[in-house]
Each structure stands twice: as C-alpha cells, then as structure tokens.
Image (cartoon, rainbow, N blue to C red; front, side, top):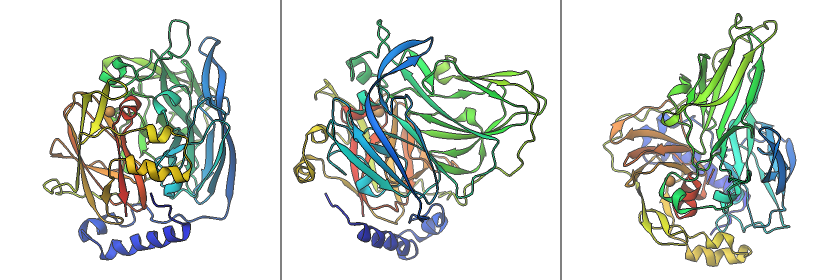
Length: 479
Ligand code: C2O
Ligand code: CU
C-alpha cells in the first residue's frame, strides 16, 4: 500500500504526460492523445455536500412503506451536481449498522479517494465519518455506492448519481436522471433479507421481482412538444441488465459511461449492464401533443415498462445545436493479433464463505480485510493477505483480455481508467466510445485496450455484486 502525497501525484501525472510522447506504443498513444485529460483543472470552486447513510423508510409503489438503507433518506440518494473544474467535497457520516465506504464509480479520483476498504482507506465504522475530496477530470454521468458488502448495501438502497456538467453545458430544455434498478421483495413486501444466496451465486446475481426507475414502478414524464432533453440513465441493479425499447421516440446515445461518444448512436442497440451509464439526447416532435410513449426494458425478450412519456401543452422552441461529441476516440484498429499484456480468466468453483466462489485467474478475492475494523496501520497487514496486484504501466498503451470460462454474465468494471473495446471472440469491434464496464456473455472473450493516466491501486471486478462479493475481484497497480 502506498499513500502518495498530492504533490507526488501531480508529478506522476506530469510524468504520464511526457510518457505520451516518449513512451511505448507511440502510434497508439498518438491516436489516443487528447482523448481525455491527464490532470484535473480546478477552477477554485469547492462544492461541499453533507451525506449520511442510514436505515430509512420510503414510500413505494401504491403507497406501501419499505424499509431501506439510504443516503439522506431517499432511494435513489441525492443527485450531486457539479461543473467540470469544481472540487467535490463530501462529508460523509455512517449511521448504518455496519461499516461502509463510498466509491465514485467511473470518476478518475486520486487513489486515496476511491473508497475501496482495506485498499485505499479503512472501512468507515458505524458512527464514523470520512471526507471525500476530488476534482473530477471528466464531465459526464457518474454514480456513487458503497464498496463494502455491496451486494447487500446497494441492494438495500445505497446509491446516488454524480453529474459533472460540461464547463459550458449545452442548452437542453431539460435534464432528467433515470436510475434503473430492481427490488427483490419477500412475501411480506420487504426487501428479501437473504443476500448472496446459492441461487444468486449460481446465476447472474440477484434479480428482483419489481423493476424501478428512480425508486418508482410507475415513472412518468410530462414533456412539451419541441422540448429537447438530456436523459442520464444509470443501471444500479445488483445483476439485472437492461436493453431499451423506445416505443417510437427518436433518441440518440451521446455518452457511454460518462464520456461523450464520437458520434450519436442508437440506444436500442445497447445492453445496459450493472454499472453502465447511457446519456440520451431526445427531441420531442413539435406536432406530438397528446401522444404517449412507453419506454420498456426488453433484455431477454420479456417487456417491462420503465417510463411513460406524455407530450402535453403548447409547443416550445427546440434548442438547436449539434450533438455533443468526443474530441477524440482512438480506433486502435488492427491490434487484435497482439498478445494481451494481461489476461483475466473468469470462472467459479465450489467453496469459500458462500459455498461458491467466483474467481479471476483461479483466485477468489478475500473480503475479510475490508470488513475488519483496522486503521491505516491495519491496512498493511491486509495488503499482505491480498493477491499480488497485476501491473499496468502508467501512460502506456496496454491490451487486456477477459476470458469468460463460465456460462454466466459478467459486466467487468475497472476503477481509475477508461478502456475501449477491441474485439469480441477475436472479431474486431470498433465502438466509437470508451467504457468503464463491459458485459461479457457466456464463454465470451473480450479484448480491450487502455492508456491509464491515473496512478494507484485500482480494482478490477465483476459488477454483478454477488459475483464480486464471492471473489470475482482483483487489483491492478498503475505505475
Ligand atoms: Cu461501481 Cu468497484 O464499482
Ligand atoms: Cu460476474
């Protein structure tokens, strides 16, 4: 474990900048240069938020009450909204009956702010506090959630959205955040209290029996004809994958996992796996008054209504501007024959605390170190228990390969960097965008490439939380 002082971090980031010109794989780096920035550019504004995690009761569906765990008493928790260049300061208090942390999913934070217990910070004990502070380097749609017993804590309702607006936001008529989730409720109508069940572990994690958007089963949006909206979708479910049917609405994907795409894309083509975000640009036709649209989930064939959109009232002027696009997304074509620097085989075996352990290269990650109430000093002992982290060179181009040896789904997520898909099952794919989470299907091999610009010890894990909890996690040292 290295606790790198901020000054040293700045130096490392500068080193990453020079590695871009001098370092390995010059052609790939030239193509990458300018895709996203190595350093944050703070504008001097500090936005301070108070945030508390605690048991709460929320109203659900037809007025029923549900006992949850929540940030600031609501599910989803608050949407924290800042401008690119602002510094985010979150003074967090844990009033849960168990330790927790907050991880800032997709945000390139200083490693010590990443919220991984036993790796980047000690767990925050019940009654304890911790202040997270970072200046986002990228604008986009991000989210935050616990990184300790997350298959229980996220399922009980702990998640919120972090929106980092562009330095100069586009003049959309309106912005809407849609948090996609599901609850698994027992016969008593409460959250089914058994977590990490054998069934969940043997399948694609815990899928609920009630699908929600912003915590509601009947999400409704009223818009005026002519309005142009930016929709920010986040999948916070433990295991469920969503694929949208838009019911005739004309929307375009403009961002994936936070960052803009190189060109607008068809939303219905996307599988939105746990962890993924999708930003849509949606214009309501001027003559649509009185019409109703239903947006559905149609992953795996069944059709579940998510949101009804009702167009009402007199038309408004449509804001006219070009679709926002990424300044640069490298294609990195023809790299599919290269050997990967790192190959991660995904599989399961019998054993471990849950009876089934999900593994990466035959190793199941041991979570005890995160749950142990140990201070910073204790983290050194824990570090000794961990599998040796893999290495990724800072500021260099690296190819990674995920090999799914199992028949289950695995949305693989990497902290602290973005990556780009190169191939599925050896067939080259040029997605015109970066990701931080990619869904692997049964027995599938996925090649990605990345240029890590942020030094530190970062997690690589499946975002099906039961798989992660039972071991499908590992670490990479970017240095
Ligand atoms: Cu949402 Cu380790 O991640
Ligand atoms: Cu998995």
